[in-house]
Length: 526
Image (cartoon, rainbow, N blue to C red; front, side, top):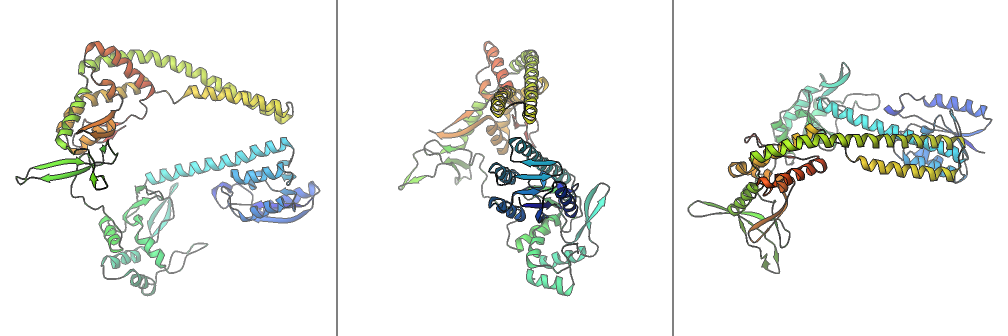
C-alpha cells in the first residue's frame, strides 16, 4: 500500500492548541515505524479546514480516487476535515475501498463499518467545534461592538492598544495628524483625490504601519477611497452587513465633515426630501388590480388642502375603475372601526380577573405535562446512546440497529413536537393582556387627535392587507382586536374571556403594538 503523511495547521483560533506542522510530521513518522508502513510522500498545508477549498487536501483526494494512495497518516481526524463536504469525500473514499486505512494517534480507521461510524462521529465533532467557535466569535464581536470596541484592525491613523482584557483603538501618534490633514485637503473641494494622494505620499512622506507580513508602503488610490468612505473616522464601528455602532475611539472628523466628503466624492449622503407626507401612502392597495394607491394633494383657491388616494393603473388608455378615496372619509371609517374594537374599562377588569385565575390553573397543568414530555425525550436520548454503544461493541447487527434507532428517533420526534414553543409565565401572559387592553381603550382617541405617524402605526398594529373598493377600506383585523370587536355587552364577556385566553396561549408570542402612553414619543413596544 502507498501511504502519505498529511499535516495541517491553521493560524486561526481553531488550531491554537494543535501541534505545529513539524511536530506533526515527526510524530507521524514515528507512528509509521510502529505500524511498519513506508511513507511515500509528506504533504503539508497551512490552511483552515472550516470550509472546502484546500488545494493540498483536494490534490490528496484526487490521488486517492485514482488509486495512487491507499493510506493516510494524520495526527487527528480533524486534520483531514472540519466541514461536512470534505468529511464526505473522505468517508465516500473509505466506502468505495479507495482509502483503505487512516492511521492517527488515536488508532486506525479501516473500511469496516464500525471504523467508518467512529470516523463519522469524529468528523461530526470537528464540524460542531467549528460551528460553536463561529457562534462564539459572532457573540464576542457583537459584545465588542456594543461596548464601542472595533472587531477589526483600525484603519490608518489609529493603533490597537490593549487595555486590561480587551483591545481598543487609539490615535497613532505618527499618522493621525497626517490623515487629518488629508481630510482637510479633500474638504476644500478644490483638490482632486489623486492630487491629495500624491501630496500625502510624496510631500508628507506617509507610509503605512509595518506589520510582520505587510505594510510600510505608500497609500494606494483604492486605499484612499476606502479611507474616505470608512465611517470609523466619524466615530462609527460598522459591520459588513451595514449595522452601525457608536465607537469609543476619538473621531477624526465630525459627521458633517464626513457627509461633506461623501458629497464631494459623488456619493449620496442624505435621503432626498419628499414634497408631501401622506399618512397612508403605500399603505393602501386597490382591490381591483392590487396596485398601491398613490396620495394626491389638491389645494383650492381658498388655500384649503384636500388629500386623495388614487390608483394610477392604466391599461390600453383606460384608468382603473376604482374611485379615489378622500382621506377624511378614510379617517372617519378607521376611527369608527377602532371604537368598535375598544372595550370598556369594566369589561377589561372583568376579563383580566377571570383570566388571572384560570391561567394559573391551566399553566400549572401545561408545565406538568411539559415536564413529562421532557423526561420522555431524555429517556429516548439515553436509549439511543445505549443502542449506539451496543453497535460500536458489535453486540447488535446493522439491520437491528437501524430498525431500533429509527423507532427511537420517530418516538423522540413526536415528543419534541408536543413541546412546541417555550411556555410563557402567567405574569408575562397577563402583561401582554394588559398592553392589549390598554391599547384598545387608548387607540380611538389617539387616532383622532394624534399625528400622522401615530395614526399609521396604530392601523398597522390593528389590521393587515388593506384594500380599497367603493371608497371604503377593507382589511383583516388582527387578534386580539378582532376578538374585542362588538363585545361591549356584558352577556358576551364570557365568550370574550375564552377567546382571549386561547389567543394568549396560542398566538400572542412576539405580539407588538405602539406604546400610546407617550403621545409625543410614540415607539413600537414588544
